[in-house]
Length: 286
Image (cartoon, rainbow, N blue to C red; front, top):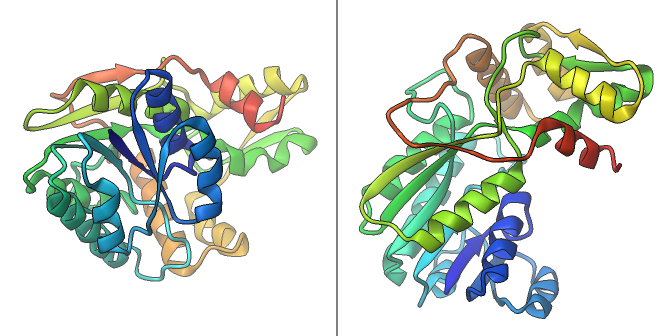
């Protein structure tokens, strides 16, 4: 049996669905019992646990041959890295107590860097914590999520796509569906020791190329609107994020634009097959 954290989210849902299609036994871990009903109907075992509840997590992980773990963002936190450090240790301790043999940890491109990466620093910390544990650990370092563009689609009606990223700098991006498929594959393959797998989509995209793909999907002209990095924090605060999250996202964007958030290299690089147009089409509800 495999345990899957975050089964109500994009990547965890795909991990669980992919494993079930392969005929594997799956235990999904959800925070809300009501969200477990659909998984029961799909043939999965359901365990209710919060990432802050070590005892419940231990029960969820017990008797499993592998677990998919991640740190879901807590946008109410005003001390993000400290809170993630605590949650990481809670999850890792539950893994140890349940004697899980293999963990696939959702991490990020740039997790090898010691600074300048915003919230990715929490994943650098998580990689260190899990790789010091007894379980074999696969750190799945995913590229920039294609679904992140969903927050910028408010401009489609007016014919523009805003971006704080450099217009013509192509960067690795990946669909959350491909993350879930890759994680399920890693779980079924099993683990031995500690390793990193880097994951991107079929090719790199610049924001200008994203705007062009959006124009094709939307069936109308779309102009890329470059926004200055200095406008990130005010824009995110206006959208409802607190000061800490806004600061971290500004640091992350600067890290992407200046080449800090890049692949470490020296690890396998997997590529998913979902292109940006397919994700944009889904985000638009096409």
